[in-house]
Length: 150
Image: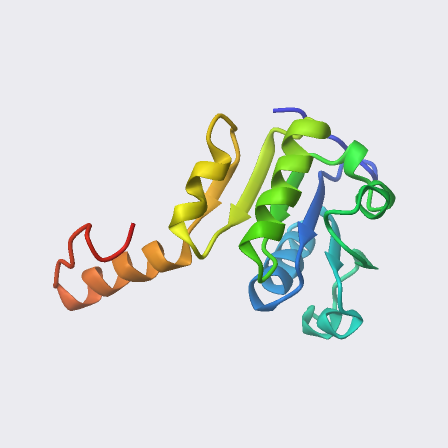
């Protein structure tokens, strides 16, 4: 894995999407000492960040090359796409991985059928529906089976 640093001794991370999950990730990574830049289309979304957040906030489109270049993607070590839109997340993750050659790329997908879009990449996907199903099975001791959630 290539580690790129924007500030001395800090690993740079871009988080695409400042919703509940994105703001939580960005705030936590920032507290852990990562150099975090978060991008969202809506300025108001940044209010979700922890009050001690010291990273960069960029209001813009995560799929726009000028926006992500301004965010420092060319020096980025990790890219996390967690907007509320699966297509945006897939596109942003593929741009980070295929165009800017970032090896450490994560994407949140609500629709497991979108998994095919990530074939032949090393992009790692998080599926909230699958995680929720597994947690339900764990706490209820009821096995739902594979037919209910892909």
